Image 1 (tube, rainbow, N blue to C red):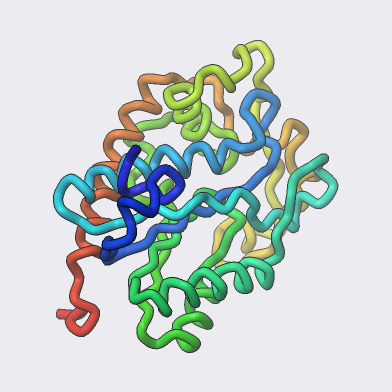
Image 2: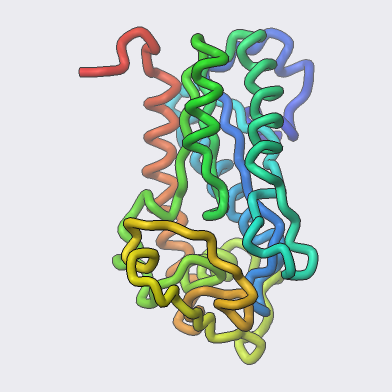
Length: 253
């Protein structure tokens, strides 16, 4: 039993507990090229958050990890078989109910750990911040925590070298042999502004990728995944501990 993982602990341990921070991992259920499981985002979130929370817990941080939400925003993948979609409005309703419980029970800090690029929590956090003025709600997206070019050779953002390497390290039993892997080649918008990043439109997934991947996974390795995992969880663990210790009345300098 890990006392900082809600799904594993019990009422005997929690009846007199007093947590400073709750973490909500949020993933997705979607195809990841031919070789990775549909639950890739959820598996990565589970392992990354658990290890980061362990680091913070062992430093003295009073943190509790809530069960992972396994469905994310997949509106651009509506024709990919069994890619399961939650609309942003549904995410807001779920978050509202969870924050209501935390606020009522005096856990005023919530970190949403985003494990899926299609989720966009910024507008939801803005709205919830007005509804629950006592709450400090934040979110993070782990691929942005470190410079990926220091770990991986190929660019990508879905079933790419990073995700494949992580899964080869965390759950090699769920990764198909290399001869099954697609190359993750993807089309870009013809309108340059969207590719340059200063304008945005949703990608229609089945029109940009034949194998559902975006990024060549063939240089992936468990060793790369292990190095990235250890470095990113150390960084996130330090951030989680800082959040636990933070005085909500004195956040700025």
